[in-house]
Image (cartoon, rainbow over all chains, first blue to last red; front, side, top):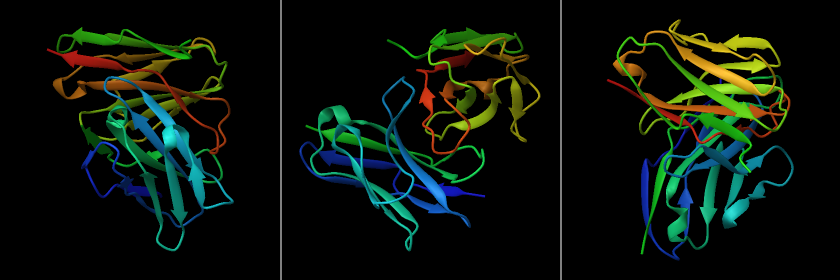
Length: 114
Length: 114
């Protein structure tokens, strides 16, 4: 089975500062990895995903993430955040074959301070 | 142009009074999911459909049922809501069951149980 740990439940950061949201996963098989964002009272929206190939994945809204197999990590980064990035961010994993469901982490609340 | 629509957005019910939440999609996706998300927690998969093939998660309570009368619509029935069932309920769709495909989420229905 797969599992996801998001190490920080809350991350406050000043506007225009860089941010990194950490995600570690556990799996005995190869996986696909995803980051979703959830704005207040809304559903989840895909930011980016890693399937294979280049370990640096670029997503929407200026976010990127790096897959590190040896450290079983998939940290999300943005070089300069905006107030509008304030939201809940979820890392998710699934095995890369078959029809297993996504397993989500508990989420990290990013608060951007003006 | 909403692609996954959930109605109502907010639902209040009384303890033990049956309630139905609805989800519709304009994407013609084969797979539909229902998730339960409690405050400050990760979404938890309740069940999913691949076409009309119903898949129940092992720990989904019997109190929760689902119907998918056609490709576009899916319903979540809670037969006797308890206080612990108060949560956000998220519907999601996916074009095919393969793990690399993106899930598209609706905005959710927030259920309050009095």
